[in-house]
Amino acid sequence: MTDSPVALITGASRGIGRAIAIELAAQGFDIAATARVPREGAQAHPLDEVGARVAQHGRRWLPIEADVSNLDGHAGVMEQVDGAFGRLDVFVSNAGVAPERRMDVLETTPESFDRVMGTNLRGAFFLAQHAARYMLHRRAAIAGFRPRLVFIGSVSAEASSPSRAEYCISKAGLSMAARVFADRLAGDGIPVFEIRPGIIRTDMTAPVQERYDAAIADGLVPQRRWGEPEDVARAIAALARGDFDYSTGLVVDVGGGLMMPRL
Image 1 (cartoon, rainbow, N blue to C red):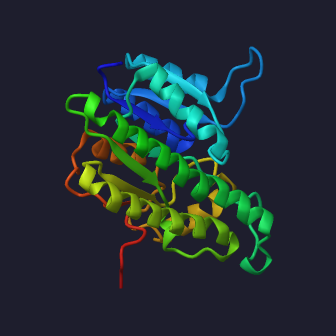
Image 2 (tube, rainbow, N blue to C red):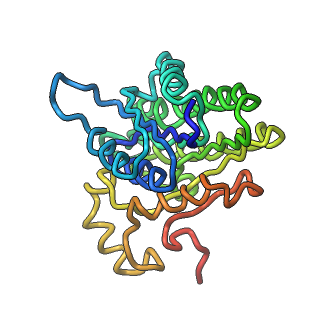
Image 3 (cartoon, rainbow, N blue to C red):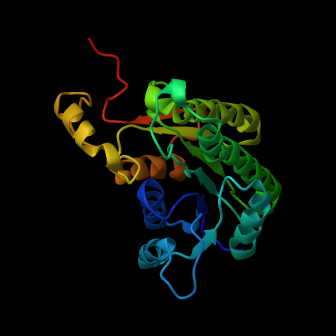
């Protein structure tokens, strides 16, 4: 078993997940990270670059090929983490998908709804369940063990977008999942948090960049800039360090004031 704290980040090959993995490595965490893209022969894998950045910080690295929406693979993810490190100090539920095509809520299809829910809510919930059970199992065996769970939600948990209803509903559900995990695990000394990113510069927002460029310039975001994945990662680092351990159930907006009530 490693003496260093260990973080597991889902969906860590790019964007917010990638930034979280690198930031937590800089904070002294060994890193396990999932991506759903399968490795093909000798070709470079999306996780390879992240692993190289983690190694630059002198931390151990475990890449895991896993699709969070596949519940049958969840036990295997935790087995790999246990086999490599023997502990899990921070679980970051980050993996998420957007609708493949934006469409009016009156045209949303069952197929698109199920696809988004399968990763963003159903998969996230049940993998977090596995992680929490593992943390409880390992608690007595590790001196000073103080595990934490963090869910990456979205301002879309509250802000309606009729052209991607399934995404908004999935994030609203994930927000309640974070709350019920926080409620259940509070007495066990496992804080649970929700991060709500705003408009973050990632592959997910790239197709609507021009629209958001204009909206941000017009004042939609009070701080008048895009959020970067590193903005989210720094917030995660504070939670992972234990800076807010007496604030279980905390919801942290990382959106430049996007959701701040204004006149």
